[in-house]
Length: 300
Image (cartoon, rainbow, N blue to C red):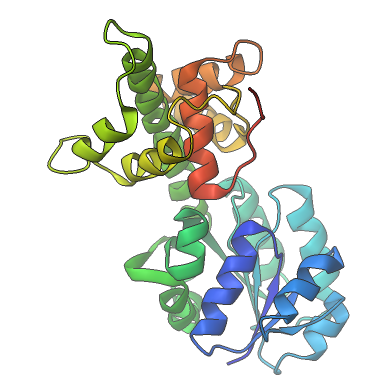
């Protein structure tokens, strides 16, 4: 079945290529035309407006959104809704706040349009070759798009986790954990860098940790890649961008009386990095760049 795809940022572009590799017909659209032109060069069918996109889809429509959280999602849904029919399916695969997803589900349900929220993890490599998906919404609707979730995800890499908002709630918690893990690695590497043993080979240490260590992980693999490029991370500043999903997670934890102290600290240090960069910040920024293509502040 041909699907519509709106949003060709870093993640969206790679998901479309993933689907294209699997011979799943896609019509892709992005608000700015340049990514549309680039994806077209890969043989993907494209549209240069939402109206054109919808016109190229079958009567029963599935449209996957991968746009910036907040007002941009609402704006796309508002523009899209007049072209949709009862039982069509809108999927939000971005990093939306779960309460916004519940609101959007209810709003579209009143128009007899189905809404599914999908937390998407795995960074750019995951988007391209197999992501991790947590899916929320009506279970019957999920069953109708399970084939699509299976296609986008890694092997055993998707799960229906509950009613509306659950998919994005789980992804929010995932991102909170990610904040704390990144900070722990950042702090550890900073102590190695500044400790009593000078000029430790951080790449070699990371490669050793990757084999049998309790703290081996994909993040350590990414650290190896980062240290291969620049052993001392001297070309970037220790400034960490982002923070929105972490703020949501901390706020939600407070509502439910969960201490969440490690995530609170990681979020606090992330904010502080913008005024007081550190080697720990360099590590976190480098790792975020490796898995998600997140921008780093150049230094030297």
